[in-house]
Amino acid sequence: MAAAWAAEAVPPDAGRLGCLPQSIAFGGGFPTQENKLGFGDRGWKQLTGWATLEGQILRRRHFTPAVLERIAQRISECERSHTGELMLAIEAVSPGHEPDSHARALEVFGKLRVWDTPQNTGVLLYLALDRHRIELIADRGIAASNDEWETVSRRLQQSLRQGAYVDGMLAAVEDIEQICERYCPPLDVADNTNELPDRPVLL
Image: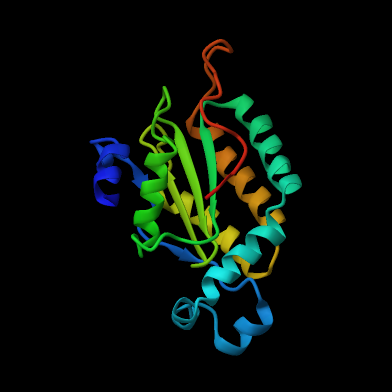
């Protein structure tokens, strides 16, 4: 069922997407426990169900309605200067049908129709809180290199590891918008419509 949905939602020429080649782990949301066990040690959390609880706690703690509105406002302000379209998706608990975060991000890319913009300039920033993973997926209309996207991810990774969720997300928005300014020049005002919601989507 999930595979059929993915085939329908993601455009047929999915190979056109410019995607980071790997998931990037952002370390722990609870530094004391992570320091004891080591960053990236996720297996025991998945096995015990702690990862599910942790993802929900992280979402409630760091992504409040006020924070989501603040991020949305910043995206809206930035997108007036270019034709890029940034979509943030934050998933507290990853679905069991897809164990790979990159593949899940591609599903979300299709489900939220990030690919469906007039200039093919959609960008998805996806966070899997329970898996501590960051994914960036950009459509073919943005000619940035994987190195540029990976720089954004690494900076965000560092912020999240330090527990600076809000500042890290806002900085990542700024970094992505700067890339869009370089590669997605503005069109006439009448044509520069906002195709995707600015408010982050909680999955």
